[in-house]
Amino acid sequence: MRKTLRVAAYAICVRDEQILLARWLNDGLPEWTLPGGGMEHGEHPCDTVLREVVEETGYRVEVTGLLGVKSRHVTLPRRFGRTVDHHGVGLIYEARVTGGELRYEVGGSTDMAEWHDLDAVPALKRVPLVDYGLRLWRERPVAGRPGE
Image (cartoon, rainbow, N blue to C red):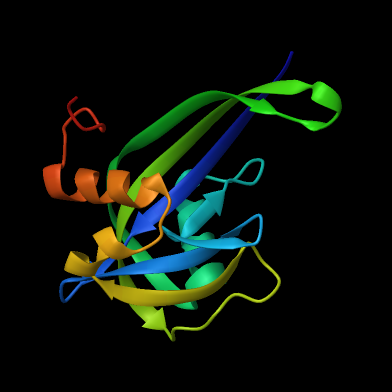
């Protein structure tokens, strides 16, 4: 079975009781996610999150801390009955907006970005990473992952 590894970096940007989210197009079905994405070969994850936030939201950010890591190991179906043993590692950073203007990504994996009230997040159609990231942001676990 083929093995794949994807390392990504994401930002939690919270201000005035609102969180910045990007709308990801998952097979044409929109879901809200944290701004961020895959690390390019040779790129530092901190640089990845800076680049990805600009691409997906238009904002320049400053990383203010590393909140934790999300590790996901799954077997994924592929074409022709094949499967892939996939390991995804996401570094979740806390960041604050330092410049730029909110705009939507064109031709990428997201189609819009928006600030959402923190108390409205549970009603949003969102990927699990949003809840995981908010849990890290609230709990700030020393080991970089929430307790069970």
